Length: 546
Ligand code: CFM
Image (cartoon, rainbow, N blue to C red; front, side, top):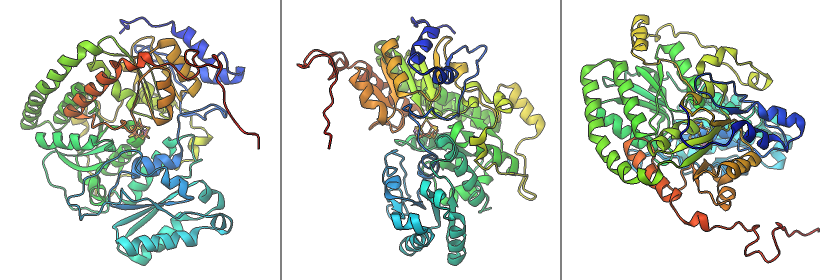
């Protein structure tokens, strides 16, 4: 589809974004700045090291493992083995929520557990302190599970978190202690941490409890982390439709759910980037197919529900899903009918981690807005171009750093949920099993796709396109807003959410309406602009020399 709005010439934009770089850097960045064509999707350079000196949006491997995948778990004591800063800055900033059955039930999300490594531990080793911390957590809380997360110094000095975890696990007998080698420097971004986390959760948790789960249509929701309450809305919809959620990885999850997840009959994946490994491993070991869904956007929610019903192939479920959609949609429509005349024709840019830059385009489409440029911080080529490119992705030294678990079918518990013929029949109905088409297929021709966008490039993009809204995170927020463009945080949602499902869609429409139609942005003069700056147009900094 061609855009109905005027785009600047994208090849000129690419030139402008890279012309100030040294030649070698410009050459490298050009491979990550791609002019989209949904018909013949071009290759995007992704999941490669950021050029030193470039201000990136990326985080680290520890962030991906501890913060992203394990962070939302409620009843695991997640201990960070490292200096206190690594823990403190990961403490509740992601706005992942949870809802214990009662206020008395375990909930460790509000805590910040750290071994608080000091110089002495870095020099002489920190394992003793780590074991003391595990013991202290056990004595205080008697949790079902304790997980240990390695920060950079742990890898540098060689503390063996796995041996320490094993020793304590055997000592306690009733507490599953396990560790993650997710040092910040592993891999090129937090994506490495996702993979490490998937491996650990799969090895140490999934399959520990074989009690059959109840329900007729049982699934796991993978890659939904309950930011701003997103998972609560999806849970509400599932319940209404008669779909049983066995486990959520990992928003609003419990140890019991994760250990029992292999008893579900389908895995639906929200965030492909962070958790596709889990889907693959569960398929191989237990025979559970996975399916990509998207509950961001009212239409996408309806579509995902229909896909689930089709998978189970039950007429009563299909009918119930239609009833739910018919009940929910009029409320959504009432809001969109009011708002869309004010948002129609506006433009958005999305630069978020690994999935949301794709998913949120659906909500902008519902608002009649066009995504002119988008990109991921750390996703891989398959998230851009679709999983069919997987065999062609070359494994570099950074990826080799991350363990690939060798999974085989479980001799007793492997049970294919669908026969080959059934899977084929589903495929013919358009249901893609174990597949993902990626972001670019859905984006307009000539829109820009930028992987690991740099700070400089995002400023340039704003100057050139003057989008009505820019979506990114807290590091970008105030710089962008000083340029007179509202920034919606799509990591933490600012103070908003949920944005999933039907209720979430209406929340998003309202928030975006308020932002893109707020006259305040046109009144803003950046501090370095001439008007009101008695010293002239130059930006000045004050600093002391001693
Ligand atoms: Fe998946 Fe996420 Fe994302 Fe992500 Fe993240 Fe996140 Fe994200 Mo921030 S798991 S890839 S590592 S959807 S924390 S909930 S918002 S960068 S786009």
